[in-house]
Length: 379
Image 1 (cartoon, rainbow, N blue to C red):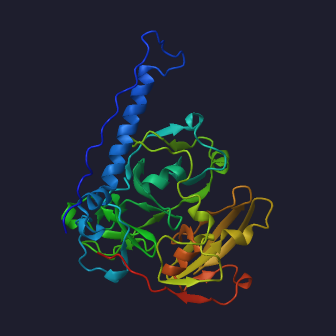
Image 2: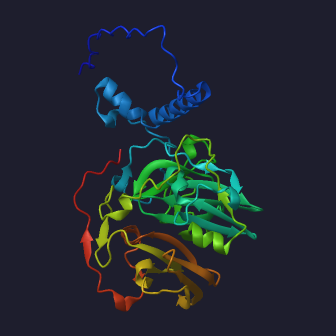
Image 3: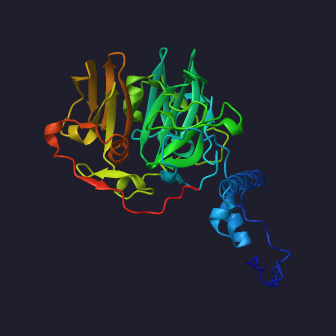
């Protein structure tokens, strides 16, 4: 197929003549302001063009997108999942830029935060840190460290899933980046501590490597909370906050996926659905050993005061707390061997169809719907 031809040159009109007596407007922006706007625009345009380079190239050469998409180097040896179910989200490797050891600010400096802003809260070695989701929407991964503990904050906006892992795995140090691939509408991460040819893929929801040199290695979960800024800063007044100064030209003013989270539609399909709950019901998923249990946040919306209660799973005791103003559910304390993460119901069930749903009396028997026939973008 011949490449598309450029259109003929269009005559450019002469600029309008201006009277020599015209004077500059008093409210004309100053040159430094104009320069700052121009530089910011160029930085954003450069980043946007790089992330979407395959689309521009495909249009320029009049070729299909599939033939233009670069194939990132991942080690898929020992792949645990059906290849045809791994979806190419059409985002280049590292097109969503993970953060590594970013800057933090004091609570008094976090003037960009609003009381209802959602945050991922981490408290390790006596230090509390808040990771605003309106920043994580654009980065999804923060490779961080507090004291002697390296850890990774992971957030997938498509499944609203949040988990924190110890970055010191059984196979060595881990540093995650975004692969640009999905499984069950959930991010596949890659370990970028090795060379491009040895980067294995890891599933956030499965908490393990699905291929590569460390295939089947599981990640160690660390405590995390998903709540709002007002609740977090009241309980942790000395908290530090992830800074907006990330080195990337993003506007972190509002959640990029706010509208997506309001309806039932999915951007990418999953293998199976259970209609006992709406797709995007937020929940706290807890497991111990082989047992898994989902606690939908909406099951406790009748509570009007902060409430704590005791639970047990596979012999592990733990305390949960519900905060009605923040509409948040959290683990207050637990026995060793208990793990948890946050997710939406459709994603949790797609990965763990044998899950318990608590409280059981509030829900009918599972109503399962298989995935409709769709074209899988696996290449």
